[in-house]
Length: 174
Picture 1 (tube, rainbow, N blue to C red):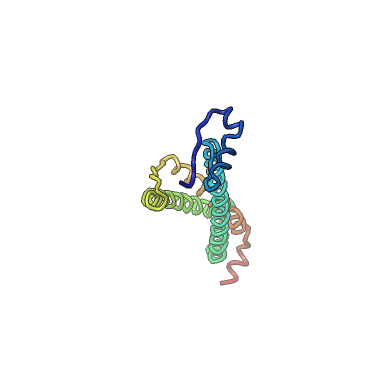
Picture 2 (picture 1 turned 90 degrees about the horizontal axis):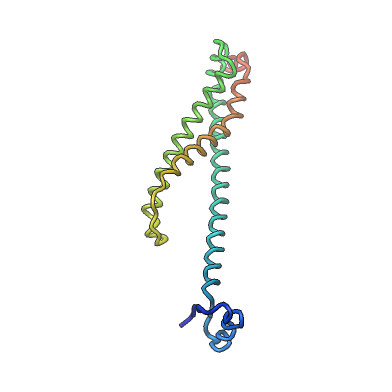
């Protein structure tokens, strides 16, 4: 025996039941059910906080990746942007082109991430953690909303930059 769980009357526990048993049985660890439950609750809170931390890091890295991709897209498409501007496309039109592209990428990424993540969780959850995992379809809406908002937010500055390019300069670089 390496542990004993004690269910005793509250008064007996307060009077030192656990301490007396720990003294009588020095090789054993005697704990109350409340101590076990408190430990489980603290562990659950720690895991929840770590999950939020990892989510924040993934959103930050994802946003930076999308912004980098969009800046590269603007840089590579300077000639096309200059041509569109020379033909009369306004800043709103150019920004909307990049933002629509970002929204579509965000929706696609959110859908793919939900499908892959849910499949892995359902498939690997029982074997790795010994916990059955049920799919939560409501999280699809959250995944789509977060991924689309992140893509739009990360694309806003590159789209603004594209809309402010000088058509003469971009066409002269050809």
